[in-house]
Image (cartoon, helix red, strand yellow):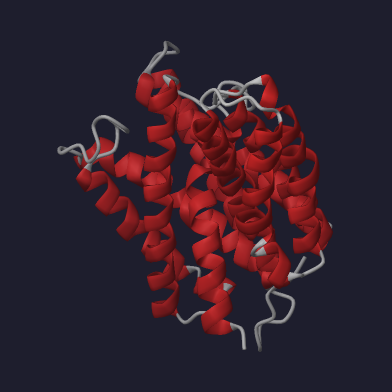
Length: 312
C-alpha cells in the first residue's frame, strides 16, 4: 500500500477505536446494559464499519485483483438478498442461473480486464435482452412482466452498480498514477460518513421527517447536516484524490446526495416487500444491501464524474 493509503487506514482505525469506546460507554452508562434503540443502532453501524474497513484493507493489500474479487463476492451476496425478496417462478430458473453464474462473473471479469466498452453495456444491453428471452421460453406468463422487470432491476443495482466500485481502479489519471485504490477509499469513507452523520444530525436537531413512509428516522435537518458535514470531510480528504479542495467538496456533495437518494429507493423496495432489512448476512446488522445501499447508487455517478473530468 502507498503511504497515503496507510495513513488513511491508520486514521480510520483510530476513529473506530474511539467510536467503539464511546459506544460501549454510552451502552454502559446511559442504557445501563439494557436495549436502547438509538445507542444499539449506532453501535451496530460502528460494528459494520469495522468489518468493512478490515475487508477493504485485505482486498487493497492484493491490489486490483483483490478488489475485483471482493466486490464480486459482495455483488453475489447483494443479488442473493434482492432475489430472495422478489416473486419468482419455476420458469425463471434459467434466467436466474444466467444472472448469477454468467452475467455476474462476466461483468467483474470485464472490469478486471479493463474493458470499459464492454462492461458498460454488458448488463443494460445484453443481459436485459437475454434474461426475458429465457424466461419467455419457459412459456410461464404468470406475472411475466413483473418477474422480468424485477430481475433486471436486481442485476442493475446489485451487479452493474456495484461493479463500478472496483472499476475505479482501472482509471488512469495523469499525476495520480498508482493512486486509484485511494479513489475507492475516499468514496466509501465519504458516503458511509454521510450516512452516519445524517443519523447523528437527525437525532440532535431533526424535526421534519423527509420521507415518513420510507425512512421515518431521516429528517430534513439530519440530511442537510449530514450532506454538508460529509462534503466538508470529502474536502478535507482531498489529499487522497486528484481533486482540489473545492472540487473534492463538490464531488462529495454529489455522491453523498446520490447515496441518500439511493437509500430512499432501497427503502421503498423494502417497504413494498414488507420487510425492515434485506437479510441477515451481517448478523445483528441486517443484510449486505442495508450497509451498502448508499455506496451502490453513488459508485456509477462517481466513476463517470472522475472518468470524464479527470481522465484524458
